[in-house]
Image (tube, rainbow over all chains, first blue to last red):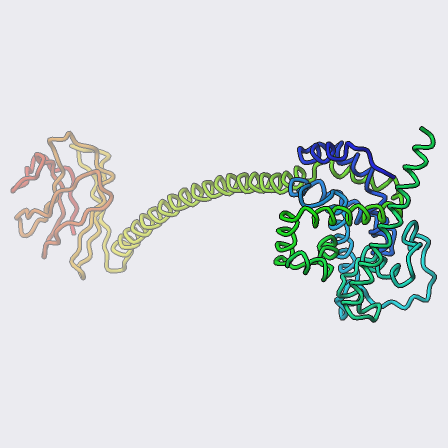
Length: 187
Length: 250
């Protein structure tokens, strides 16, 4: 789960035009990014195209990444999210021209595909916190759109997010303590 | 103040997602640069966010990486810039070749036109000549082949045997025409001259050069006979009777 320390090195090589650095970063991050893209697109073929396009953009714009401003994953996530939303907008425009919003209110009569299920610490959260994180982090909604979907005021929605993140922080810290404890036991 | 606003309004979470307006982004980035505690908080946020992402990772099919490599290893840029260049080059070549072809065609046409013009001018000339000679001939025929014309043959005497000239006399139009073709050639210092005999007096009618087909001479009223003598070149005022070669009575 933890990526090798050479990420910084890889990113430096990437900005120097090293394609192998890009492929290594792909190996490290494509799964996490594909998880997000797939949940936004809800279409595996489209999601695969978007993932490829995301890494092409990462390659082309590598010089504009500034490690001072944020982590590589944050930067790559933003690219993936925007690429996915744009791709969705294009296909939606082809299907229906009247509705220009990205998230068409599809009636979810059909069962959700497996990949829509969320895993890990998020499942320890309260349901409304889970939904809030899912909408914003995994489905590509803006805070503005998501609070309307949940039917709560924006302020309330923001506090959901904040509480959810606080809760996650606690879970991760506990995990870290356990890992440390086990490590100490072994040593 | 800024820090409170950022934390209070959850701007950091929105900044993380890239949702903020340009102004808010500048504000947040400024605050992050100035405040180490805020920056630490943001780093934590990113860490958790990343963990969340990795917990929900889905392995993409191997095909995607393969396609990505294929796309990056075969530079599209080259092919896209080369194709229009090739197209332009071949178009230019086609234009050049057709220009050369058209130029030679044009030159040929120009040459043909020139030779046609020369031929036409030549034909025009010949036609003019023909017309003139036709007019001349028909004129002559008219003067000769006429019921009012009396043809007279002047046979040569002992001085010039075998010589023969034909005179056509028209008393109505008072015209005398002579065909000297039957007369033998003379040295350049001599010429034939024709005379009319009017009551015993020889009156000059004109010279008779042998290089012409028909010669129009002076018509003399009341002439009794026509006479041809050989005279010095340029003619004579009085006939040299000893050199009379032919005569005919009218």
